[in-house]
Image (cartoon, rainbow, N blue to C red; front, side, top):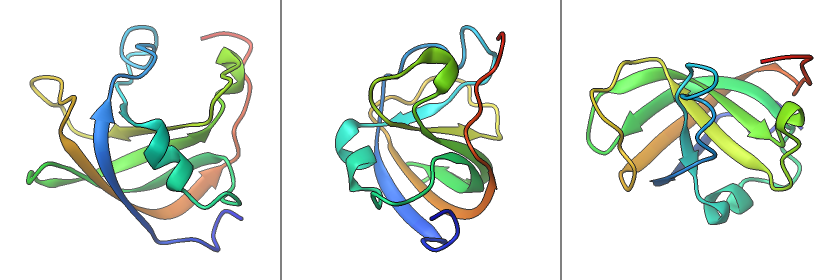
Length: 114
């Protein structure tokens, strides 16, 4: 399920997430809407992936991506959260995020603490 769908191309509007990535973990993420998440192949493995991302018509940057329920936080809905390896000056909610997922790192894990 992890590699069969790769590379996987996706684009969608950046929406407000749970506000945890930046605030609690210091790892800001760009989140896709539920509709975009639901458009992912239903049998794609949850876990951590890597690839490339572009916001709007900006430059392309490396990224890592989480697909799943974030067991530590006990999410009810699956989410797709992209951490772009670049420092942005400001938030970009409402912009179009384009990604290509090129590889799989590991399955989702639960953690004992933040």
